[in-house]
Image 1 (spheres, helix red, strand yellow):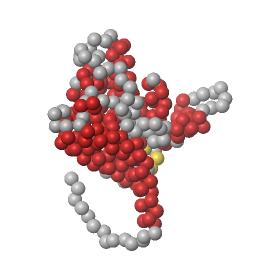
Image 2: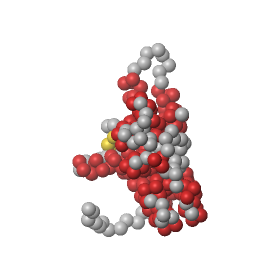
Image 3: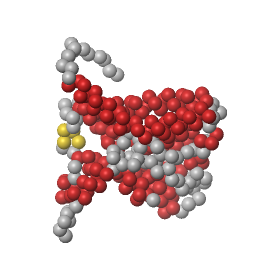
Image 4: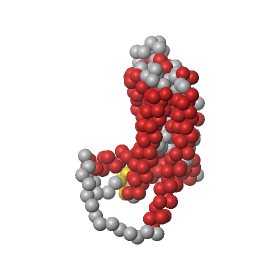
Length: 263
């Protein structure tokens, strides 16, 4: 099941690229294979591995002594269970433990993994691993005061970062509005379980902290709306940005330069 989740989350572009670079002869070299992969494929594989590994480690550490989740298992079972939950956060919605019994720290960590989701062109939701990577590269470049944003010795266009920022900001605004409505419609439910439901819905993960049946009619409508937005959101945003870019080409109006203080 974990293999199927990862396979679907990588995206078709990565699998087509892997098929293209796989050697036809018996000679095989990992270095040659890696260098022939596209920048997109290398980024997706690295970020996916990092998210799976870090998610497994964090869940294992936080839930290691929780008797309701991993505490009663043997060490190999704990590792397997932690890896399964880390994998299912990408989009699957399967679970081998009761998420309503997880510690608050685990639920909080899972919010970020769910909103990142999978990779473009795959079956997963979220803002996508590449979008998250672009934000990370942007922050590092600003801290280092680098003139150009580079990744794997490749210079990235500024438009890529603009799109990544726009997608992330749109998700954040929708989540803030949805969580605000859920806290109004279902005040008896704790904030963290409500946030978990909202993040899971917009990332099309399908996991629940056990409060979905307890939501009011308005709360369930909000969750439904989040699932629809999460499924079509990134594609719609990217297409709209492309349309805006085409419109700008027909408008050569340039305004005077201005500065704004940030931070």
